[in-house]
Length: 218
Image (cartoon, rainbow, N blue to C red; front, side, top):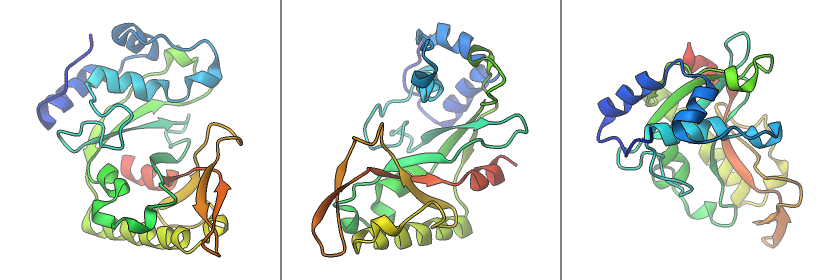
């Protein structure tokens, strides 16, 4: 059962109700997406299978997953205590051109504007195929939260644009942070250094802190 793109939010939430409670093994059968045998290759599998089930349309494009609705899909793996087990990736940063972006037209804002959050079991003690999908919910930032996200984005992009990328670590930013986003240490890209020269570095991405997503699921 693979759905076409939902026509509105109500149709999307209706599909989410069909998804709730499914095990990963059931999801694999329904979406014809076999679970990889190698545990290393399972990262991202659940999100892709859920996208397939719900009829996401963006694929690998830098657009919200349900781009006709302006809705991004994000899974939240929860540990045994019901807390997010990791930060949430939002979007890869274009290090050489980020200085040309503005918050309201940025890829980051487009991804954060309206999100369908789907909690999933992430407890490593539960066999992967037996982990289940939780109850999804739609979210948009309040004015207060959006202002903090904007401040974080402006602060972090200014550091990148002025050649201080190497000074940024995961402690920078209140809700939004920058972390390396690469398959391995050989996956390099270019950024500007303090002298304005291009130099090789690891790709980076914007992430939401686990403490922030914990606040959301409360």
